[in-house]
Length: 174
Length: 286
Image (tube, rainbow over all chains, first blue to last red):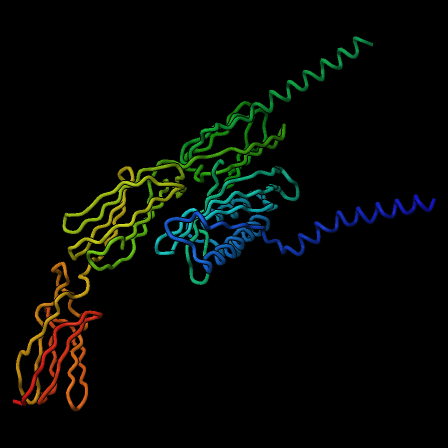
């Protein structure tokens, strides 16, 4: 009898840990996507360490902004991290979602990012991003579409006042 | 009993077949292109959502009708999702390719450059379609840099949407036309090519008056023979027993001129930027 109780208790503890640890990890991660940036193959200019850190910080913030904006249909996060066509495009997406009563929840499973072009004057950088993303489209509270896919993104970032902003963000088949 | 099982199985097979047939009817062309119309085959009635990178399109449809999306509605290239809600619930992801090149984003640097310098001008071209989708496939991009009709051309194939070149500045000063073009779409930038540092900077005494010595340079040119622009600073330094006198003069009409205090025995030197000119020894007050 005592052994049975112990087994049940251990099982309960294991269950709590298995559920609680991922939850705790997500809370601690603060919603920031995991991004690995490789700049070794950037051409024609080598990416400086300071720029590499800034790109990593700002590209991460951009993805965080996409997640927030598409989930809550708000524009503010986009304005801070996007410019030019990428901003126009995402702004339109949020407006359309709002109009049709939709929202998109993005569960970001991580990005493998490679800098493929860094302009000679250091004003623009192009990134190739292999992202693993779970997308859920919600109509009201109902999930009407859900998938998890590895998607190839191409992003062009340009220097703005105090940060790098995403100017082009486009998906392409791998 | 056997008959019953047969009937149940037959119903199940028919049901499955009907489901398969219905599912097959949500057909999205796999060669969709941004800016071109799209037709989606559906069955039954309901609502279709098309969720693209920068758009959401919602359409209601009735039995037997295709959902037609106009070319100007399908603007964004990339991964789209189509969700059908109604008699059945189906969804599918599909890709939209960018259209043909119609817009170029051209970064030409710097805007002002000395003549005859190797690999000092850079041109970067991003290739887009009409709806600002980056064209990731290889596209030949032409670059042409010319001053006064003479210049050079180069064709570069874009890679992941971008093409770039490095070019030397021409030996001749002037406003260089830096042009990038793809399939008749052209973007022009001006790169002002200015004379480089002066070459053979020389001065002479141009006159003496009122206890002053007037020194003047010969016409100041760079090593390619281009006149150094007016406004460039030329520094005259006179050293004598009482110390050092310095005059910064601007080039005006091709030469620079300065008045220095007359001295019994003075040495005058001239410099422009990092270039030193000749030295004059002057003596005897007028």
